[in-house]
Length: 140
View 1 (cartoon, rainbow, N blue to C red):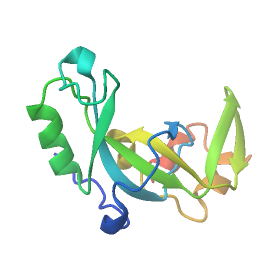
View 2: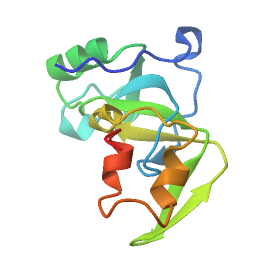
View 3: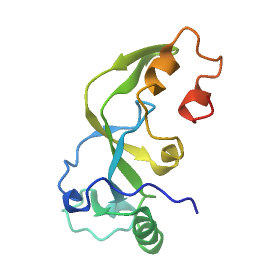
View 4: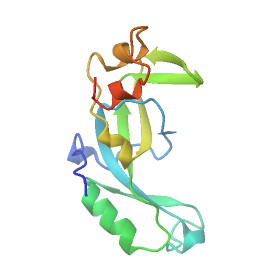
């Protein structure tokens, strides 16, 4: 199992809004918490009048253990902070957005290195390699 990043501030886990963006942006700055969504229609206990809900964790390992041992749960997601990100409103058209946002990501996306001061500029550069994902994967 891969070691996933520690959360930025353990004391703030559970204080973030439930409704955030989902995926996207290509880069990450900080992991804020790990979430496991629970679905009563799939067998999770119905504690929110039929609505989906989630539990928060300050590390991936505990989130994974919870999701594996409870019915009606999803695999863990990471709530991340993007201080800047890449918007792709049309395929192949990339825009550098310098605005913070919170988004949930599949934890596998955290295999990419954390954003550096050059990641986005290198990615959108006209001199970027044909496979731009090499930049995001830390291979360039």
